[in-house]
Amino acid sequence: MKKIFYFLFLSVLISAVFPISAEIVRDGDEWRVYDEQYSDEIEFEYRDVLIPHNKWGTGDWLPGCSGIIPLSVKFNVEYGAEMGAKMKGKAKAQWPEAVKVFFEGANDGGFSDMFYGINMEALWKNCYTGAENELSKWLNFDLSFADEKTFQPFLLDGNVDNPVSMEDSVDHFQLYEGSLADMVGGSCGLNIPLIGDVCSLIHFNFELDGKMYVEMFGSRIGLDEKQERSIFSDNQYLVIEPPIVGTVMKIPIFYESKTYYRIEIIFTVTIRIRILELEFPIPITIPIVPGKEKLWQYNSQEVEFNFPAIFIESRAHKFADTMPGDEDYWEFEVENIGTRDMEVKVVSNDTNFIVIPDTLNIGPGAKSAVTVFFKPYDVGVQKGAVTLYSNDPVEPVTRVSLFGYSSESETQWTQVIEGDEPRWEVGKSAGGCSISVIGGE
Picture 1: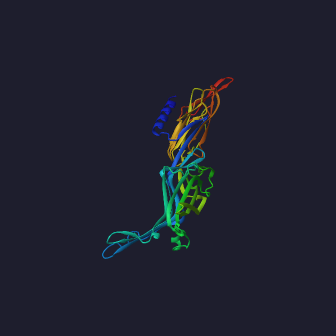
Picture 2: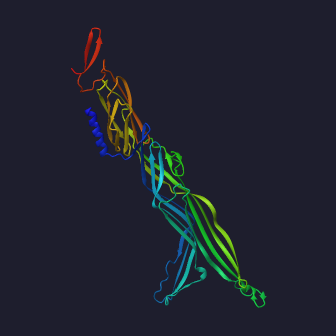
Picture 3: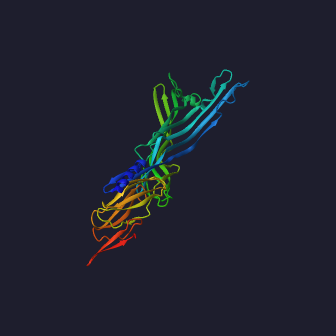
């Protein structure tokens, strides 16, 4: 009995030195050891380029106003049509049994942007007065718009109820304003008495409006099909079979999101008749990119997880024949041949077999001893098992079979432990009892 108390004390000490990090939960008559692990941070990125975003021109004033140079010119053009998104975060694996892999975005880890259109500046500067003037009003305009957003965290998480949307526009860019007479270069030869030339009464205003709308829905995280290891997936996670050989799992994954976008130019012609003070706006929508859906597939990433792996050399043991109230014990080693700490819940299914300790925390490459005491209460054959529940995703449940025999008389000692005191075999005969020495001198 002293041995049992000693091992109980030792198990408490081990638990204090090596605290359990995985969650051990009772599930009916059994136990579950839940574990989880994050990968290093990864980043997905995708850019949808219709027209590459470029800048061209002089930059600053050229040449600079120095010496006898009377003027300087600035000419710059920026154009393009593209949109994109980035998302940073970590993959998260949860198990036992199959490994469920999620992706969690980092705070401020999502970024999306877009740019569309063209803008131009064409200026000249009087080097003596410093006055700036347009080279031509037709060469100075801004028909571009841009937008960017940062998310906390990014919502490309498989949830279609949380779209990432961007919208921007250019409003009322005036192309031309003037009368019909100005357009035709003079009178159109149609006069109304007391009112005058009809072409002078009709005015036109030509305006451009632009709009770009983008909406991204989280779609799914996908596994490289060459791996062929995904046994289930939906929009938010993968369930992957753990590695049978090796305890480091590298998973090439990619991300897809459904994107809807629309780009259009609205050309509006407004006709105004001055004498009647009437206006007739005529909008004409020109779809540059008609509304459509597109599937964005981001750049592939590789995430890595480490797992524990349990190894027990002996999975069965027969105890020496033991009288009720007496005890025999056996010690076996549990080894972690994996690359992550292993948490183990050790349970005996029979009160004739007492196991100490009941929890283990074993580092990669390390071993820990488990002691089983055979302390029978009744006579006869005793059978039991020690069940080890661990966070090994391949073998979360391991069993060690136990056998023993107990009798109050005619005890047959079939095994003598080396170094023990001599034991006796007692038999009955018609003439009385006989005693034979087994072991010893």
